[in-house]
Each structure stands twice: as C-alpha cells, then as structure tokens.
Length: 242
Image (cartoon, rainbow, N blue to C red; front, side, top):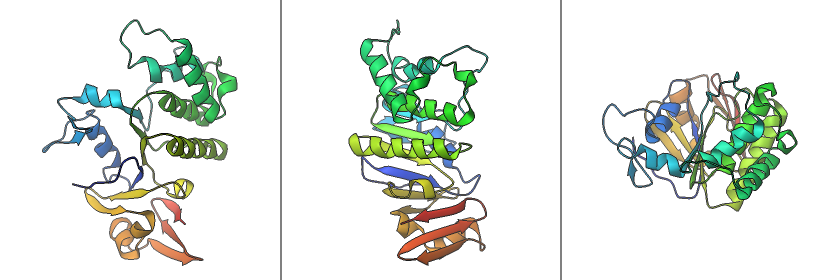
C-alpha cells in the first residue's frame, strides 16, 4: 500500500474487522515486522529505528496491558506519558506534574488524581489513557479504537479533548475507528482499508456508495439528507459525515 496526507492532519482509519487497521499501525511503530517491504515513519525505518519512532509518536493501543493488580494511581499512569521517554532516573518534575494534571483536566479526570487506577470504570480508564498520551511529547498521536467500550460521557469527553488538542497544537492525530460519527466534524482525511488502500481523501469523498459497498458488502447503504452523507453498515453501525 502507498498513500500520503498533509501534515498536521486528523486522519481516521476505517474498514471492516480484519481489514488490517491495527496491523498497519503496529507495523509502522515497529511493534511487528512487515512480511515484506519497508515502512518509514518521520524518516525512520520502522524495523531498524523503532525506538526513535516511539520517542516521537504517542500511542494509545486498543487494549492497554496495565496490570490491574498493581496498585498504581491515576497520576502514575498519566505521568508515564512523560517519564517513559526520559533517561533514568525517571523523576517527575513540577512541570511534568502540571502537564499531567492539565491533561487529566481535559478529560474531566483531574479530581481523581490520587484515585487507584484499578478502581475506575472502563470508560474512566480509557480517559486516563488518552490523558497519558496528551501529556506526552511527540509530533504524532496514534489511537487505536479509543472510543470502543466507553460510555457516552467518556466518548464525548475524549472526542472533545482530541478536537481541542488538534486545533491548539501542531500535532497529527491518527485514529482507528469503526464509527466516523463521533469525530466527523474534526476529521480532515479518511483512509479506507480492506487488506490494502481502497480509498483515501476527505470524508465525503470516501462515503461513495460503490466504494463503501466494495468494502462492506452490498448491504451497506449511503443516505444523503440535507447535504449530509450517512453510511449504514453491518460492521460499523451508523457512520456520518457532515
């Protein structure tokens, strides 16, 4: 596959289950090795220079492997976003704590600064993990299904925080999602995958009936109403861009 987008951008990666969305991101970050070919991120080879890429890219995986039996507090989780990229000894400075607290404030979790992380609900944990990424440093922010399994309140807070962060900072956001609806107003580009690049462009240009049916099957429907395009698929639910 080959594609390009302008930077900084807010890119949504969509496609049916098993289409390669997470695989593409993991390969780009050097977490898995491509079977063939090469991937370059910010001028670095994803296999040879994976550590350099991860210093410049903030990543929120689909399932974060934080051991809930470890008695870590919310502040410890968010400070990881700043400390893991520092050389030992990794001691949080006053600035680190201020940035971490402000990141939590963006997702309305600052009041839980000292709360044990395992005591939080699933939606609250996801908000903390997004705050951890916002507290970090790097020109690219990658999120793999950050809204999956979250309640409506957490979903709205995460979307609003990402939208503000993108507007106020020179940072590209790449977000894998099965539903464009929550982020349709802030997305610049959409990458449609099904084992390869099917389409890339502005949301409305991707919401073409024949293009969507070629990926999601003949049951996929595009509905236009009042200048807006709606996409209904069995895999992704109700996607909208306006």
